Amino acid sequence: YSLHKEQACTISDIYGIDVNQIRIAGSGYNNSIFNANGRTPRAKSAPFRLLFAGKLSKAKGVMELLKACDELATDKDTPDFSLTLAGGCTDDDVRIAVENYQSKDYSNTACKGIDYIGMLSQKELAGIMRESDVFVLPSYFEGLGLVLIEAMACGLVPISTDLPGVQEWMNGAIKDNNVIYVPQPDMETDDKPYDYALPGYVADLKKCILQACNAVKEEAPPPDTSDVSWDGVAQNIFER
Image 1 (cartoon, rainbow, N blue to C red):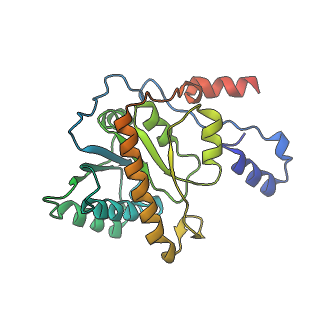
Image 2 (cartoon, rainbow, N blue to C red; image 1 turned 90 degrees about the vertical axis):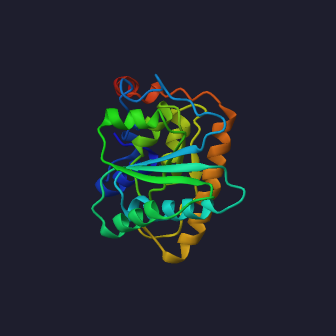
């Protein structure tokens, strides 16, 4: 079994297994925790609530997310927004950058705050998701990005780097999913972009954040993620 088709091809190459013998299981989430029950709707005049959750590291694109939000703050066409970061951080460079952006004076700008809240339990994270509008995962390397599905199930509009295999699997597993994809920058290693590619990635990320805010305003119902719940994935495995 593999997460998606791209990974199945990698497994086939490494172990010499016929790719037709590898089944796509996908990934599943705990829908008893991650759901939209009790979701706090956004007031029409309130700032858009952006959320990142995961390890705060360069490979997760946190530095570029901070830069994108900093640039959006002074753009006259940007609606008011806030950014919350959740997760552990062991990278001193990222920690210092987060602290600097947190303490920056954003008075009279579109940014209404950048807040780092540290590590959370799954239940705590689900609660924060239900109080947010847009989930941003600007990661340069992921297996499948389970947290995107968890965010979608909680009613958020997710943004993800267009990583190999992810969009294809999402489109097959979740009908009418609302993931917005940021083009993947040219990569130097599996999880490190070339420096020359970062300004373009930041620019694309800014566009996707604005697109997500517009999608939130449309108030479309969230997609049905039941097929990728634990029960749905188990059923898929049994049937194969």
